Each structure stands twice: as C-alpha cells, then as structure tokens.
Length: 376
Image (cartoon, rainbow, N blue to C red; front, top):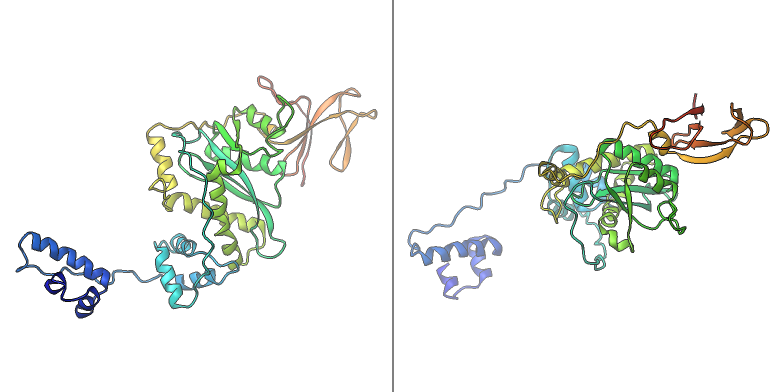
C-alpha cells in the first residue's frame, strides 16, 4: 500500500501481488488511507472480504433457468431470477443469472436500447383515485395463432396491478367481464384513465358508450389520455409483460388461455408483493399498504346492488313482435307484454341472456321477464 501511495507500483501490479481484484484493492487502499490520516499505519491490517457467501441454488432452479433462457422468445435474466424467487422462494439477482448464463453459454441477445420516453408525471397521492386501463394485442401464446389481447389495470399511486387477463380479442363483453371482477375483488376506483377507443369514447356530444354508462352508474368517471405516451405507466406495464409472459408460456408449452391466465395471475400477485419498484423504492403492495395506513385511499367497496349483473351486460332494446315473442338466443320466446312493448335484452359475458322490463335505474328493482342460461 505504501509503495502504491508513493507511485512505485501500479494498481494492477499491487493487486497482482496481493492476489486480489483491482476493485477490492481500491477498497483496501481507501481503508489504508483512513489509517494514514489517523496515524494508525503501524497497526493497520486489511479486513476480510467475507468469502463466498452465496447460497447454493435450490434443486431444479438451474434446470428452470436453462429452460426459460432457451425458450422462443428467450426470457430475460431478470424474469429468470424472478421465477426462481417465485417458485423456490430463493431471492436471486439478475446479474447472478447473467454470469451463470455466460458460463453455460446461454447468453441472451441484447435487446436494442429503448427509445427516449416522454417526461413522467408524478403519481396521485391516493390509491384508487386513478387507475390506468388499456388493452394490449400481442402474440402472447406460442405459435402463429397465439395473438390475443391483454386487459390490464394499474393503480396510479402505488403501481399495484389490480387485474390482468388475456382474452381471444378485445370486445365489449371482455371489458364487461373483466372490470366488475376486479371491482368485486379490490374495490371501485374514482376514475379510469383510458384512450379514445370506441368502447370508451363517442363523438356524439353528451352521449356515453355502453361501457362508459355502466361505469357512470357506479360513479366511476373516465379521463381520456391525449396520446398513448400520456398514460405511460400502463404502457410500461404492457412492455413488462411482453418481455416475460411469452417466454414463460413458450417454455411451459402453454397454448390454452385458461392455463395462461392462471400463470398470469400468479405472476401478477408475485410482482405486486415481491418485486421492488425502481421509482418508489419499495414493492407496489408495500406502497399500497403504506397509503392505507396513512388513510390515503379513495377506494369504495362494491355496492350490494340488484342491478349489478345487468349493468355489466351487453344490453339491447327490442320490441315484442306481432306474435307476442322476441328472439332469445336460437329461439323465440313468448312474453306477457303487449305487442310493440320495448324490453331490454341483456347478454351476459358467460353467455346467459336475460330479458328485463326496464333498463337499470337507481331507486328501482329489476323485473326479470325471462332468463335463458347458456348451458343447462
């Protein structure tokens, strides 16, 4: 150390003589300089590095990482480390997986650097005050026929993902099934931040789409983003899943949506509880709980409303025909209503069809005229 301080040795030579890396040599040299400043050079001794304290990987973890890195498309190092944590409860750093992959000659090709993003606005201070909502069509399942749509929500305050689910395609019935299921589990937010898709926005002044009317019935408002970049949190969440989910489904040879949604739900809950958010400095679930403790919550419990299954259905107004019947599914059924009377036909996401005497309205109770189950 004294010779290096007097510039008689280079750092590489001094590290070679001590048989340590240059990084550890500079750590020792910093400690040596503190001893010089305190006039303790005669009694100074280098500290111990602590040795290799890395725990051995659990049985099966190496095979799992190998399978994920060999998938098409290959998984990222961070996702491989996350899967080892989720399946084996063994925290692992992405750099450790990368070094292991290099030794095993399983390096993943570097992805092109991301484009510079737009300035990020600060999140709201209450959970449930604003949820960003969007759909992402992508080749989620392996194979050429694996294109489907991901519906996803993210809480603007805590970054918790309240819900995410794959559907064959984005339809109104898919939205009407996805949203109430999340509301029943988590609660009702104050506002959804969406784009100007036809399911949310109509160019007719003061008119509402059926989905917007269903949300308004339970006092959930819509805020429209001027550009996709404006709702950057949900866009980055889509990229997060695009880097992970296709690799996992390909590695596990999952081709059915039901099984894919099971894995997606497990990954979503693990991400909320265990993966530290870079901007927040904590996991999304920890940020959620911190907001609850500080009484910064705008969530509302789902109401016990008799209209609930009918509000979240595809409703059409039909007239009773001259024969006193209306079309319900593959048949025409008789209704005890005068000819020409308008009734409401509700198509539920599970395939059931219900006929109501009147559309949903506060202060009234639904009058069911007919119910046709999709499956006996």
